Image (cartoon, rainbow, N blue to C red; front, side, top):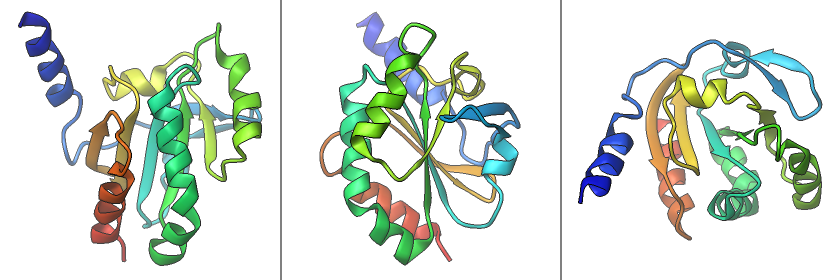
Length: 159
């Protein structure tokens, strides 16, 4: 019972709506350095998906979104940014996995998990929806079909 309480507490204290994304330096999959502030420029809705190569639900979610991503972009202008949280032991798996999937997302590498820690993320997959640099929605975990709920949130906050 205690472990369930701790999990629920962790999920509900991880974020707060309206919280701004901290400005951090982060590298993309090609090793180019950027900042979270630069990534979040513009007024379109952004989805940041925190994932790892060892997280099957993470990969399933990114695969499901990829199937409809072009339509989402056409209709709402949304941008998906996939942040790999793999550490030094597993980061070498990211590039081959992404190449095999042929995802059209911007892929970032959070090797030291600074971005993940800054948002107090404890569970993967973790999705953050951002509008005007502020968090408007978060979700942990993935079940098939939950990408449709995510799209409804995106539509609601798009131009």
